[in-house]
Length: 347
Image (cartoon, rainbow, N blue to C red; front, side, top):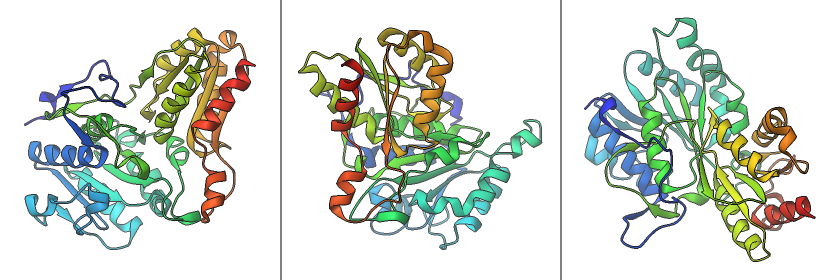
């Protein structure tokens, strides 16, 4: 079936996809990703999945388990540990009319493919006046786990947001993971689809039918009037927890989940800041030159006159990621950091 027949969530929202209602179908984040891959491959024979470990028993944290048996080893197959080479192969396949889904298990090693991504995947459509496209989706994973430390726990999304021609998506809920992955596979441009390890077990409402959430469309997770809190990826979940704590003290926080970092839903951001007059941005990456810095700069450029207080950025410390558990606790921000930042703005 052509991609134009798929249902589009025009509002870019659902019934608060971080929560579930009675009687709704509920699945995990990992199951939502697998369902999106399954439906994309059933819909379009040009879609295939490649990457290290996609046909292992673990199936990339369970997101590809069962797919090799269902679609065969010509459409779901393992690749060598040669990141630059396999990225080049996937770009070539996309240029030839296929829609590859390339799995880089850890975003930490995606920089080994930067020549392919920056100088090739991101540029082909521009250099050929739109007559050539690279419909490539790259799945990669960020987030802490079992002391993975400096080379296996980094959040490098800002690196890819900086490159024109690359789209960057970071879904925080099962509903968004499915709708945004289907949108990424259907898109004509290369998309970096970033999943957070701590979200795989989260559950939420996900319809059985296939649907698309437009890239570049964020959502309001929680309405509020005192402060805008932008949460990125897992930090959207932490922002929701922070808002519940703040509510106990009479502080009404509005929580935004941008979902796509490039393109970015500027109108959603600006409208919220105009309403609340205060902004806190919580990112999973480093603070210096991070996504939070760009969001803060956009707000300063466009809605400065509405701000009642300086913008606060919450991010990881500008150090390599530690391995020990006590240092991890100090390194990674969470809901408590958001609560403190909001109280400081309102004091």
